[in-house]
Structure formats: C-alpha cells, structure tokens
Length: 137
Image (tube, rainbow, N blue to C red; front, top):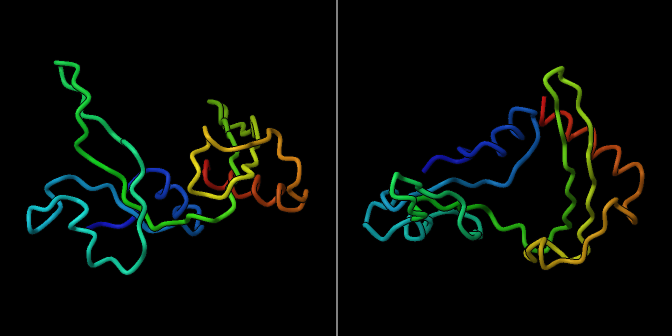
C-alpha cells in the first residue's frame, strides 16, 4: 500500500508540512481478496474511512464507488478550515476562515461553526494563513 498518494496530502508534504498517513484504496488492494478494509489490518495506527471519495462515472452515468480514502484517525482534534484561492497571476487570498466548535469526527455539515474564526488567537490565525499559502504554492 502506498502512503500519501492523494492530492491534498501530497501538496501538504511538498510544502514540508506533516499530514496524517493515508491512502486511496481499491478492492484489488487486498492480497486475500477481502477488499480495502482487510488490507489495513497490518497498519500501525487507527484508521477512519469517510464516506464516498471518488466515483467511477462511465458513459452509463453510474456512480459506483471503486476507491475509498483510508486515513489515520484524527478524531477529537480541533478543526479549522481556510478557503484559499489563487488566481492565474499567482495572487493568493484567504476567502474565508472557519472555526469548527465540535471536535474532528463530526461532519462539518453537522457541526457548529463560525466564519470568520472568532475564538482563535490572531497568532494562530496568522500561522494557519502562512501554512495555507505554502500549501497552494
């Protein structure tokens, strides 16, 4: 199994930042035919398997899942989101900063959030902005 083979984690690693280990897996990734979950049995960390990540959309318009994202669990961590935009002239701006009050593991759509961040110290907001810019570069 390859670790860090999905785009966001690769961007984080290329910016010399840390990311939770994870991989995109398909049914064929298990040696015993048990599928992706069986292939995770020897990992040395807890995993979380979120809902559908990718679809195989063929000419028939089917939405059959053929891959899932398997990541190290970060349930209970604090979650912050920054919506970042870069234009064709390489200008980068934070469109929105979001503070989730529920811990990781609660879907953002089900979580109490504020935008912009209200209780996050300015020093941390500045650091998050700096890190976001390094990821999109």
